[in-house]
Length: 152
Image 1 (cartoon, rainbow, N blue to C red):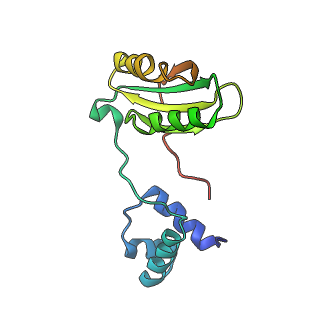
Image 2: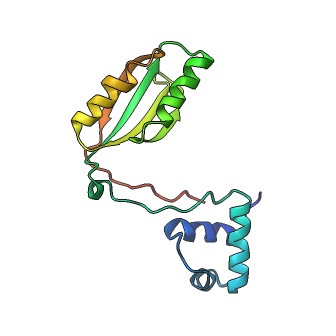
């Protein structure tokens, strides 16, 4: 789907505030309320906008440790990859997971209550997986930029 400048501005506005009422969005976009609503609905229906979610402050809900964990596999078979993907999907502490090129095969973003919880996740869940060779973690000391909008 090709985006025009109005679509791009609408997406940018919704990335900043996904709860913006239609009349405010229309005013910002210099469109009628119905035009803004139809554009939003089209972008949602076409899958350009995947959904809306609340951004929760991790420390306010007791998640004091954020870490990035690199996982290197010892085998790259289909079954091992499928099994590891299932393991990752079932761990609520893993909020994001990427398959990478390079030395690490996966990068996991993890939020835990404390270092002991992170250690248990690594030692008791990730490392025992039969396809995992090595796990390396980096603790986030401070997050300088938080989940910024995409540059559309």
